[in-house]
Amino acid sequence: MIGVSTKILGRKIIYFQEIDSTNEYAKRIAMEEEEGTLIIADVQRKGHGRRSREWASPRGGIWMSVILKPDVHPRHLIKIVFVGAVAVVEALEALGVEARIKWPNDILVNGKKICGILAEGKYSESKVDYIILGVGLNINVDKDALPPEATSLKEILGVELPLMDVFKVLIGKLEHWYGIFKRQEHDILFNRWRSHAILNRKVRILSEEGEFEGIAWDVDEDGALIVETPDGKMEKVIYGDVSLRYA
Ligand code: BT5
Image (tube, rainbow, N blue to C red):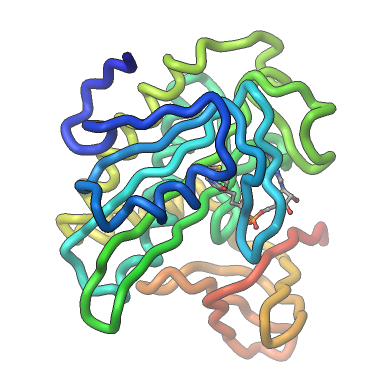
């Protein structure tokens, strides 16, 4: 039994030793479940990121998904990724680790990815059926079990941490920031996000429209990244990957 002190998130927890993907499982049951149901697994056989990219999920990490049913206009759903990012950064901060957010969904420590966030949902133009917030956080994972661009808390701190302690801190932070999202206090969310984000620097963008370089200045009120191209134009990137360039 996992005891958590949150009120909504994790009021029901479904735990697996092994699963294909907690996000996929969450999607299968989301319509029947209440908001806050959380799926967590020790190992994912087919953990994935965006565009079906593989997500390494060996034993020692937190691989979890929460089912959310916010009563908001669907255009706000992109902000759920920001909720996850700020919560993870604050949870790491509480453990003494300084992390940065790389738009849209990467959490980096010392330039390496320690956590990825994946929000997937079902919604129409006017109504949200559900949104799944998936979080993958490398805790007691050995370097060799991860891609070279990744890191884990174990690598950073040199010790293993009780997974449950980290989970409890994380879910508390998620509930806090999800509450802010539901109250539509978007400025508070965005300002906190900005204070941890990697901004004001040269980046390379890979998006559906192609590749270009520029300076990432900020995000707009919808969460799109604002990038200034070399000819001085401001581009808004809604969906894409950012790689950091060192000037
Ligand atoms: C993400 O995708 O960063 C979102 C990852 C979300 C994973 C969670 S775990 C629980 C839930 N269930 C799931 O099946 N998924 C969610 P993306 O931005 O597409 O980044 C994917 C890239 O991250 C890969 O192509 C690798 O380069 C890198 N990567 C893979 N596994 C990693 C790991 N464990 N740690 C850090 N980086 C990793």
